[in-house]
Length: 72
Length: 249
Image 1 (cartoon, chains in turn yellow, brown):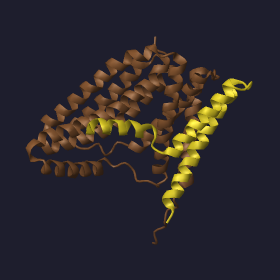
Image 2 (cartoon, rainbow over the protein chains, first blue to last red):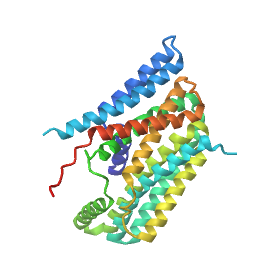
Image 3 (tube, rainbow over the protein chains, first blue to last red):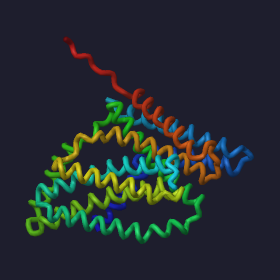
Image 4 (cartoon, each protein chain N blue to C red):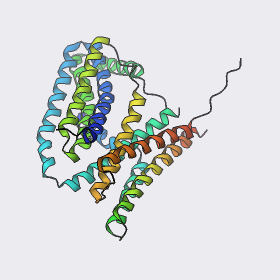
């Protein structure tokens, strides 16, 4: 049972290393999906949003984690 | 005929990511072999490889039943979560915020941990050591399987991606057999940085395709995405890098 628990925990941590990062990425995908499927905007615009927003999420997440760790 | 513009990134990502995972598993297997001999290490590794093979054989055919766009979307989102997570950690390491991965330190820590566990349960020492090897190979192997599926399934490139992963396993095993010590000189953070970049690029690409985006340049767009993630990761590392304290002469 311990092995199964460890495997499940490992699988979970593969995708949810940081809850805020996970939520931010899922929110970006949801907004891109809405832009592409629920508005009359060109699909490529939704794709461009997805790319730029993912990069922004990465940079902000690194910055936030660094600030958190550097706090005295 | 294999189109390398399409297959190259998938094979490369599977190869590099697998090196990282196999090196981590190898360190634990080596701990077991050093403490209790090769028999429990090989038994544990073999059992884990059997379980991993069973998982691939059982779940592999199911992938063909999933509609392509849904498969691309699900895998794309999982790749974004996994890839950006790796890239974030690699940027923090490159910026000196979290310590670099040290296989020698991990080897020492795992050796101490397993020694204590074995000492507590004298009756079944080989069994405990074998389980440790089993868990390490199973857990790291699951990550390798995910990466191979993630970079290969969306374009029918499972075989080339699997060969990339297999080549990584063989390379680590050969070098490990020769060196007979933890592979501490593998530039693991650089590899993780590169793999994080590639997986994030694949993640945006598959998620977009799954949502119905027709990327300009098709597969070549992957290279542009990878370049942008690389620049972003390096910029993030630079942004958080602590200023070096000058040593007085």
